[in-house]
Amino acid sequence: MTEVTISSVKVENVGEPISRRVALWLAMMVAGLTGAAMMYLEWRSFFGVPHELSVPVHMANEGSPVRMWAPWWVPASIVMLLTMMLWRLLAVRKGGISFWGGVLAMVFAGPLIHLVAIICLEVGAMLQFNPRPPINRILALIPPVIREGLGLIVIMGSVWGVLWGALIGMFTVLLGRLMLRLARSFDGLMTESKT
Image 1 (spheres, rainbow, N blue to C red):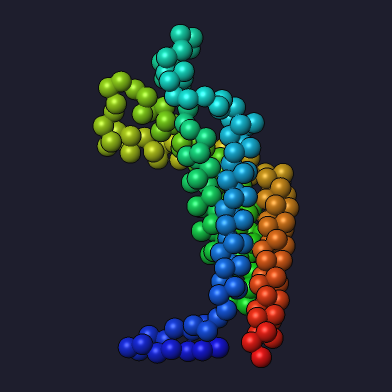
Image 2: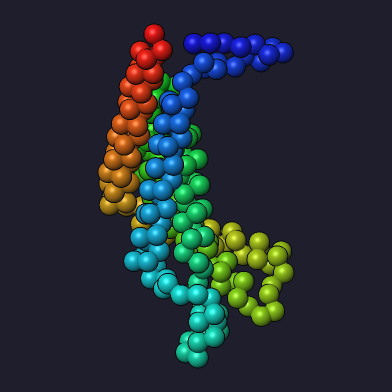
């Protein structure tokens, strides 16, 4: 391990192989994409938000002028970023990827899906009013929306949510560890070819 001291700040792992860092980033991306896929499946199946552009939603004759609607990619992107942050915080360790940390990250990502979906649907409905409410009123309504989402987390975060999150987390950890193993073997091949 190479240590560099720059103005009394010690930076470790400067000599860490780039392939290992790339493998950790790819594993984090896989975890984020898994979270986005989980969000998309919940968005379409549990919440039943249709695939349609905003024009038919707002111009349809049936129903109310304000509907619970948001583009599918907004909550999927938010959950992807939150899952990547959870993965980085809990799963990525100095020696590689922590099995239990990765499983825990995906178990925590499962209930976040419902919270993010409720917030996106409610804010999407608030933004459809004409005239649009001022930002301070929208921000004042966020805490009750979060409370509603937390209630949904308690309901949906039951045994099945934990079990599915653990299974998905195990799959994601194993895939990340496979990427790390491939990166280490690639590093071994590169050092052999240099000698």
